[in-house]
Length: 178
Length: 176
Image (cartoon, rainbow over the protein chains, first blue to last red):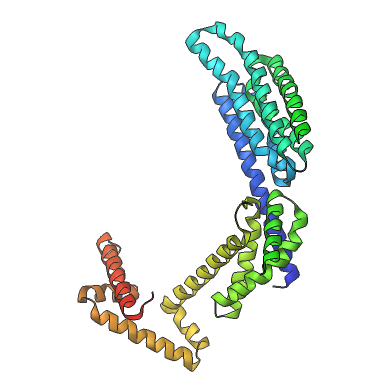
């Protein structure tokens, strides 16, 4: 095999390896969407959110760099925030329907935790911290929305506001200390 | 590979794992000669060594996205190359063991040295077969002729016979 041909094949193998990484991230999104449906979220809304989240995570993981590094921690943080309102709803089966009033605060709290976690990780990045922050917030926010739609549009907006409100000062503070 | 080249390879693999495509060329340029030299030392046949090195290089790049930068890149890549060399060597041995494949190989590997090595190996194997019990020798010969009984009893008997054959070989010749 000519060296130039070998180089081309090696490059193709590398890109395929990265595509496999993107496919893994997409598979995690599918699992999250399936979990949201299994926990009672409507299929239509979940499919819509998953249709936005799936290509985003796959492309970011395939591309790599700072945005690619943000995918896995953001999916982890987002899935935690997704489960918070769903856990409240599960609690209502035990404590009665009145505890549904905690759904919205659970979404906001989830957003705060997601924003703070992503901001702390972004501030640790040696290069591309803005890229990490933006990608992380987008992925984590969409993942959290899979559960926060339980509290309606207010739940999703509350989660997003919580993420921005907590993430911004944490990120700025960490940058100032550096 | 000297220290600075090794450090450069480590940095390059870390960048490739992170998705930095600009690291591809330097990693390719530093890794290919190393893998080629490694395979040439591990496999006596030049064509096979070239195949093993190319296959190892493609696997290294296919797995580059999963490379953990905390690991040492050179032993990681050489581990993949060693696996490829071992796989090729095993495939060659299997081809030799197959009765149908023996004839064409014998035509190609017909140097006096190869013939002498082959004869010595056959004699050594025959001596060890003679030292084993009749049942073990019969089981091994039946398996070599392709007359394998599909029963679990025959399989276990064959496993035991192979283990005793290996033990005897090691005791006499010191290697597998």
